[in-house]
Amino acid sequence: MSSVTRDHRASDHDTPACSDEHLTVLALAARGGAPADVEAFTRAVYTDVSRFIAYLAGTPSAEDLTQETFVRVLGSLPRFAGRSSARTWLLSIARRVVVDRFRSASRRPRIADLADWQAAAERCQPRGLPGREDGVALADLLAKVPHERREAFVLTQVVGMPYAEAALLIGCPIGTVRSRVARARTQLIESLEAADRAA
Picture: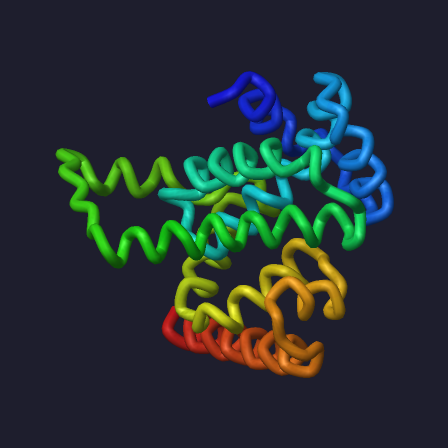
């Protein structure tokens, strides 16, 4: 793990969310490769990327996928032209990294040989969310939402991306994104109500 991304994990809670315009300015400045500019851009987007990946792919592989995303981003950064917002560009790369991992995993299933699987699972629970228990509950509920709905919900409701940008990133009409988000929200509410009744 690079020192830049290691520092971001430690300071996730200290980094305020940046506007799309500000992130784009940071990305354009970082194209030249100056370490301070690259670090400023990486620090500003790290939390959004890692959270997005964790919700799409699950927390056990999120760290590796986040690292792989930043390797691709830093390799592509000199070619970033600012035709879309940096957040949209970055999350589209993250989405491709997750899709590539799923494709790879479907061709070569991996078997984990862990002596203490329960401890390993507990160590991989989401962090940096409103509360650890809330994060575990949300991740568990989102895992039951179909992938297309979950992706639209995470982009718009967790990451905070506008519906129009999410539609461009996913590659579908904005109405479809709205529909997927509404259906995901309905499913999450129903799951919460069912859990309350069972408690």
